[in-house]
Image (cartoon, rainbow, N blue to C red; front, side, top):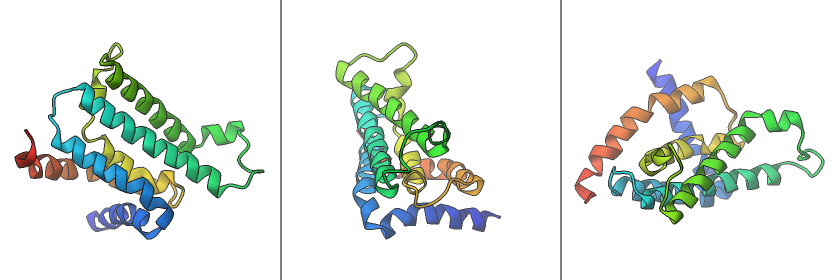
Length: 167
């Protein structure tokens, strides 16, 4: 059972590097994750800016992929397209990214929005869902379970592995 989810997770990480048009979108997310992990775990406007940029970058890439993969006749917005998981996730990521970036630049979080400064690990999820949102892989329960199952071990490794490099 664990072997199956490990292979699904490895496929999620491997896929963007097998397609040249995905590399320019995924590499900045890895750098963003590294920089987020090297900053303090305390909520700050700096981390909100980092998170906002990463979310907007990923969302912009997903929109680009959507329009480049669909012909002009199939990309007309309709209710079915707006309710698709990929589109809903992209809209959510763009909105959170915009709010985080604006909050960081204004140095003021919205009410109940201070969590935007605590999102050091959010790039993990952007990286894990990147090939799915770029439509090179389809959403499935196995992929979602693999993302969630490996979130804690990856967080553990990133948190404690990079601890000597943090201030």
